[in-house]
Amino acid sequence: MSPRRSYDQYCSAARALDVVGDRWTLLIVRELFAGPRRYTDLHADLPGVSTDVLASRLKDMERDGIATRRRLPPPGAAYVYELTPRGRRLLPVLRALGEWGADDLGERRPTDAVRAHWFALPLLGALEGEGLVEVRLEEGDFHLHVGRDEEPLYGDGPAPAEPDARLLLSAATCTAVARGETTLADAVREGRITVTGDGTLAKALREG
Image 1 (cartoon, rainbow, N blue to C red):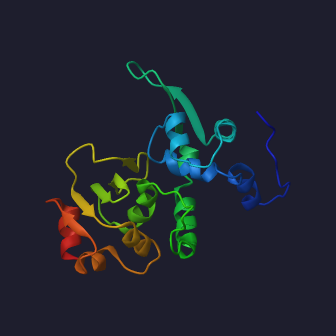
Image 2: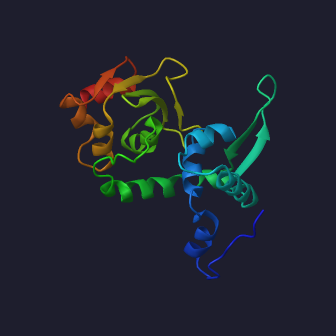
Image 3: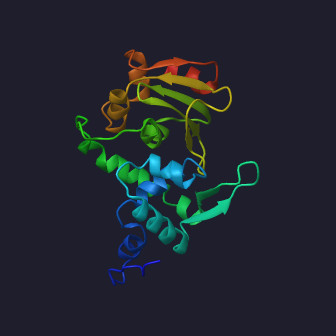
């Protein structure tokens, strides 16, 4: 494990960047808000990161108390990484960074990778209430645990149980919501989002 580099500044922002300022660290945190993840899953959902860098960052995150590694009980018996309470306190940081960076999304570049669940945090910030929401994009499906402040906040694939609402929309509409160009309610009224389901969240979105 390499020694942690430091800005050597007596400033809370500098101290925070000592811990999470390295390339890939906050994106690993983003992935871990989906709950415990295997190393192979993290590597698959962080295109561009080398195996050496990912392993190094995970060790650093364990050392700094952001993440922990544990072995699943049989029949899984695999090692997974998950956020600690200190790591989960980074949620407002990620949300603020996402809001700040939304204006820079622009048009998707040919070299840009995309995973459907990368839209999870912006949509969570736009949804009110509490419940399970399934989101369907052309890029894939994911689900959201709305109204929760602890992991998992979201997950890949269809909802694990009958959701309170299902949303069918495009990545372009997700981007517009993230950038504040439209609200979920307006996008539903305009026909850019199709809402199905009988739960409170579905009814609120249709009536909003």
